[in-house]
Image 1: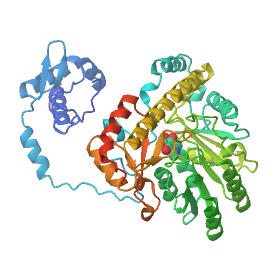
Image 2: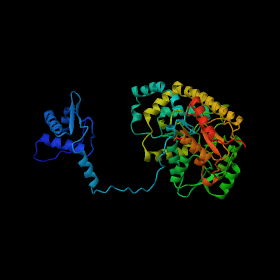
Image 3: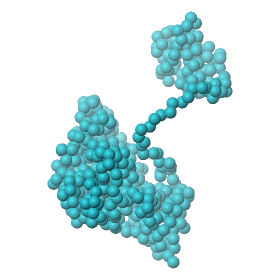
Image 4: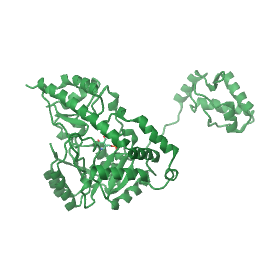
Length: 484
Ligand SMILES: Cc1ncc(COP(=O)(O)O)c(C=O)c1O
């Protein structure tokens, strides 16, 4: 420890005693904890502008009183057992001071009770396997960013993102996803994008159409802005467009939030014909669409459909993409690709919340993308997830052959299967969790609880290796229903 905040009394005592008193107070009020190292006599002397011998005298006074210990060549530390610890606790308990009660005007999203990765077998639907990330390779690009830092960009200024990173992302989006003519803004993950968009596009009471089964964190951001959510019916091929049309005619829908490529959580891909109809409706009724394309790359059998944003002559699609699945959620990197007319409003609002997203990290990722490492990694994980999907599908097919009553459609992409277990999906998920197997049932994804048929579970296949997938599924097997 180099510095320690001390309150030194201005009384008539000798300086070393006043300093000893102040250090003693810091120990008693918890500023420094038992066994914690104290500043060296030299460092404290410099901080307090006194002679080093004065500090040593103060420390020796405290050693004599039992508050401080010293070991040869290890400097001074707070004693492991304090002399009056019990009387201190008593004093605290008898204290009359009332703790401040906060007035909270808006509540956040709530913490997850036990994270999925704490379980031995983790079938959470959207978890990437972080261990596949090439940390060593990436370290080289982080180093490059530190060796030749973009000094100007590290200062306050442009809040839309680090330009070289934006250039890499635009090239990638154009080449791989056919998205052109959009402005790109870098955010700290899709969640930040959803929050900003909700705040700037909605006012209290506005109606937003969302998929009946969907992504709760997005709904929470929309609701926080005062939106009323209207659920669209779903089929095995994404949303029911007739139902959407009916809802648009019945309500004044202000915004549409969709996950077209791999519908979250059912994994269905929205067919091209439906996309065209949805777009026509959106254009006709002036409704912007948020397209959340959270795991675009993980598509296995063929090239995925281009995003709706790739064919957006009216500029009404707000395209969201995330690095959480490609890299890892902790990277907090997300992209908004939007029409020029909206872009600066997003950047302006973002400036209320924050000045920038992490520039050094964007610089390192840009270097990684330029080098080709990003796409190499993508090819590697896509192959790996494809094998894991096959492993899960094969195992579940064996279960079916053995007489288990389950059904599923093999998704073209994504990171999870949506499995019809007949009934008791909630109970299965709960029992599985008790046995160290994390998975969620359909009830976790319904906009309206009353729509819960208690039939489906979501099984993520990307986040753990094949051995774990097999072991986890074997634990799950006795919980599933036999054909009658
Ligand atoms: C539907 C959906 N959108 C977006 C994300 C990514 O969010 P973020 O970029 O905030 O990590 C996820 C992650 O699970 C998701 O499931």
